[in-house]
Image: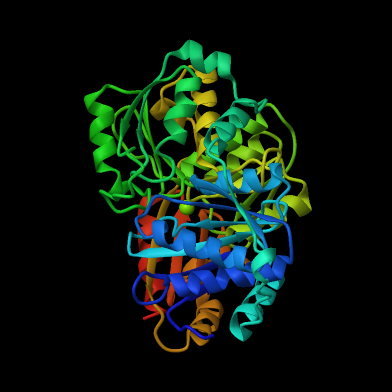
Length: 452
Ligand code: MG
């Protein structure tokens, strides 16, 4: 069963509704995943985009047809699925969400019984079952059953409040006012509920959970103008924005300035490491500000390849106490091993409350870096261009150390740069970050010329 319009990645599959990801394909993947797991229960949840209402029953049908039981937990953040898998002792989980991709997309993310993304080897096995249609369909009296559970958002909030490093008393005392923009996605109930329980005065925009993406869904500064305006209008202390499946978190300061999602992780790292000792894991595309903060608090910092599953595997291998991605993805492994905007929010509020600073004052105490993130279509032989650039890099960058685990990452005196091809799209990504704005711009310009 080949479908060239389905894009496969380490964590699952995605496609555009109508020209790639159809209910038939979703059912086949449900049956393939059930066949792969053989028996037991599977937790299924989804984000709020409209196509979820057809893709979710299709996936569930596939699972039931091969004899797996399903726990349907409805519209929930991706991390909530991870938590439910672990707590219900399910064999696995599926979250139906295309994350920060626009409405026309949808996707299936697969989790194993530990509530973490299936490994690349597990994925290959699943894909083989799908391609060869080796589904273990059951007879009429051996089909699976559906159990509906609606309490997992509340459970997720409760567990977040129980994290030791979340200072509930200090947050309550600080009497913060916060605006939440959940882009009408899966964070629409969860984030306001968490804030309410923390005693925060909460103003919601785009929290209808109806899948109406009123702005571009990726929580990057250019998409947060509505939140910025609301923070200023309500004279709030800060704004919180998540992506449609609520695993990534971005912040807007009290002046309405979107501070960039890189700083979410830096603040969360500060919250944890100021109370708990241990290593930190970030990916090779993450701002150096997080490394600097972690080191200043006595933590060893390890870098992983890009991709949530790589970060999680490295967190496990290094026994890290905190980790994540510079795109606003905070991972607190003592709770569960996935990016989580609820944990991110609670940790950010903790630092603000304990340090008695505004968000802009807090950021002003951090090392200042200037970064540029570019992407462009791959033209010609990318690996040839990459090796030509590697040979000539000295002329542009001077003395460097080179990390070749994921494309090329050069570390040099004033900063670093990384160039790599995307895991999910036919594009390359270039990130340049230095302590000097002009230098960042000039390096980005010079490097880009090699990849025309
Ligand atoms: Mg996401």
